[in-house]
Length: 440
Image 1: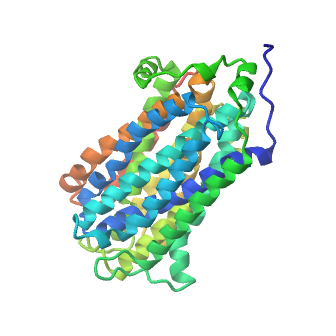
Image 2: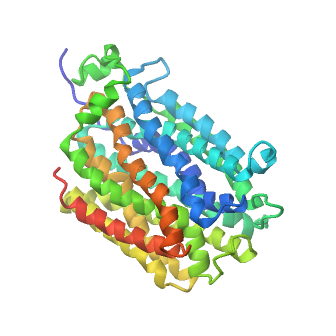
Image 3: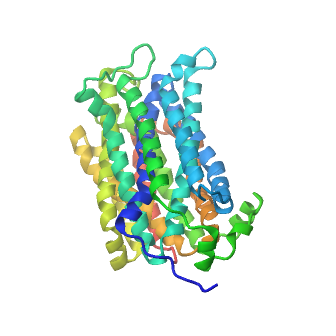
């Protein structure tokens, strides 16, 4: 059969392909901005937060390579990647409904343990839905559109995260929904935000499933990818693929390690750090009205950095074309590192918006540039499994931080989470230095 080139997709087709990621990130933003507050409402101490968050990257490390492997090798009349999108969306929606209601099952297990369990289930579900989206971009786009595809995906991720991040404060300030915790129950504005998030995930994923075509095995064979319908493969092949990963992926692993150890610290510790450092609350306070105001503002700040990310993603392709992908990524990570470190010096909560600009620039690049660099260096018929294996370099640093971060915060930082945020900034800058040594 004569080899043909994958057709270029227009902008609306690329957008439709990534709308599902908008829904996933809507829920992901609610998780990142509010999970620590929910766990503290359930009784978790600040130095234990990283341990409860540890379940999320552990499940991601296990789930994503397996999901990638199966999405490479299972072909159905419904599609190749679509069954995983839809399954993950349904499970994530259920987890979002149950996590803020864990107190209703307090007679079975301690509420904080139940909350951590639902956090793990939620993150695993996001992983089931998320990674096949990365592979779908590489599946459907010709090589010269990869950077554009991942940048559009990042823009939609930012839009979903902006709305998700601002939603708790919007419900409280505009619609008068209470943000106070009464009797150990999650704040109403957070509860209703999670319900809305569950609906958004399902609606967005269904949009992508209905509007996006996946190429059949025969079409992909015509593109020169071999007869993939007969490949199959066992789970043990994941270990072979891991040992045979391209050099570029290994080099990017160092960049990802530093970047994601920083992001994990920000997500886990931002609320207590800002509540105590910026709002001046005592370290023992994690339930007052002011603390919950700080929590709402942190969720909104996360929305702001995602908004910056969405805008910056629009210009990433042109910047990368002029200066190179790795240089662009290094610059972006430096902006994020400086943004994180600046939080230590800020006393006016409104000035934190400046910090979020730097973090948003880094986040846009983290979501797009490593994948754009990687996509051209891995076998196309192994795209799903290698995107899943690449997730190891995202989950491993979070696991390291989860195990040791709480101990460091308690013993070295005196339970003051702001120093974890400063160290996150340092790690982000180390990631920028590592990016300069990647060979594309």
